[in-house]
Length: 212
Image (cartoon, rainbow, N blue to C red; front, side, top):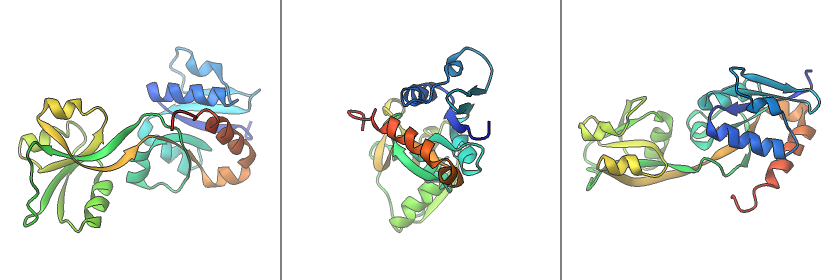
């Protein structure tokens, strides 16, 4: 039982797509897709145990060793910098981390820039690299409303289609980095279950032609 490969999947549509890739890679567990409130699923024959967790928590489960491997967005990895191995870009959930502002915004470098975001560490590193003084305003939801109401000058947030920005008269001002789902591994787990993790890596890599 303890030699099972423990895999943390992000809840939601992304997690279902990821599971499909894992299944095709030779790590099936059909009960994962059954309609139930269960969170942990095992297939002893395949030596695999899956569990659903909140996407932002996947890296914590992997870093702490509750999971040997998992799938987390590059936004989470960049923000929290967990002590894990980042093994593979799965090419799923593509979007971007960006700075957005009201249309026509011009940065006045003579004053501190007010930045509303839920990604404080990412914003701090980005602006530090540019030598820009900022005031972080930490928000958890509806970030787009901050510059509209004058709470902030800009926002740092994930942008997918940009529809929400356009509907609120905002636009992308600067792109910080691209985001997609990444396969990550616990460092100790990689050492002790390296053969199985390598097999998973190979099985996933073979599916990426035309995706990456």
